[in-house]
Image: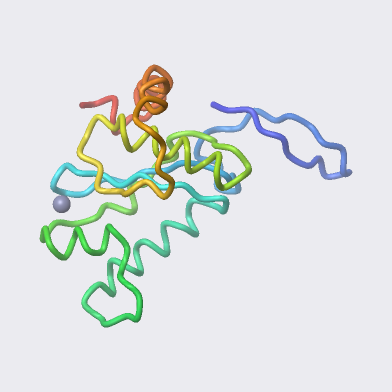
Length: 150
Ligand SMILES: [Zn+2]
């Protein structure tokens, strides 16, 4: 559970405690598994459902030509002949409200992921810094059911 600032109906800012899966939540790190045991970890400043929908569409249309290269998940599913379980996507944690903050945390989580993560960090953080985040990353992964099972 995380506390985040939200807008009171009357316009007064207030702190509300909300479940991790609250659909209106933005600025977060999410993940979803593949049938082969690998996983994808990503960050978004938008709602997870919107970003996941884009992943799903990209994966579904993986054989159609496109001007730019398809995402890592689409390429993985195509090469690996496995399935992406986008419907099982889960929020790992809240992240900062700037893209760079989210990218740094995303890099740390990809680096410390307990399963094989196919995602490529969008921002390259030196390993020595990523190692400093190990305890925090481990704690976050333990709070996500899908990882805790392993
Ligand atoms: Zn796979």
